[in-house]
Length: 215
Image (tube, rainbow, N blue to C red):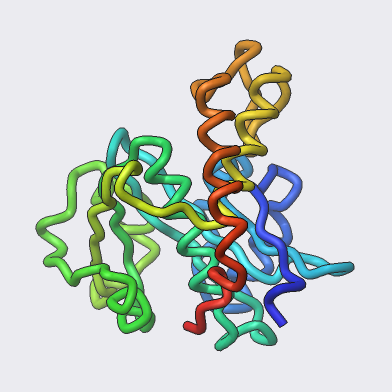
């Protein structure tokens, strides 16, 4: 059951586990480095290891969504949707307005989540210049894009609220945030971001089961 699986921000310590998941699924890992993991969300089974992951590479207000993977035993139970929603919420809150991705055979899944097929020539230079786009993914891979709505227009999920609160509180203490290190007593979210995140999770408590959507 996916309710026993918790999502959290990834850390550099998760590199091997994430790499193993991707390799088992036949997905590329050649360009996966520990410094990229601060933009990843991972799923951990209660009392066990990681069973899912998703990440992005950011280029201003644009990002390449990458490395969505779930363990074989969890597939078909909604975990992929939970991971995607959590990452989109986090990207939206951080100012990202457009997500791009490459997929060989999951285009149907992403289409159900409002990603549209695009011609490879339409990819922005920042995305086209990534190793995943130029080298690791075959030319036959589907290129897809999604524009993210304004954060104020989107009802947050419970999981994304928890991730935002964790980031804000860690930044307030001057501790590492989402795999990176806060360079000031407050990260970009500050007290205002913490209050907003707490309001989001309080709002989401009236939505039990909102994260259990099937793929």
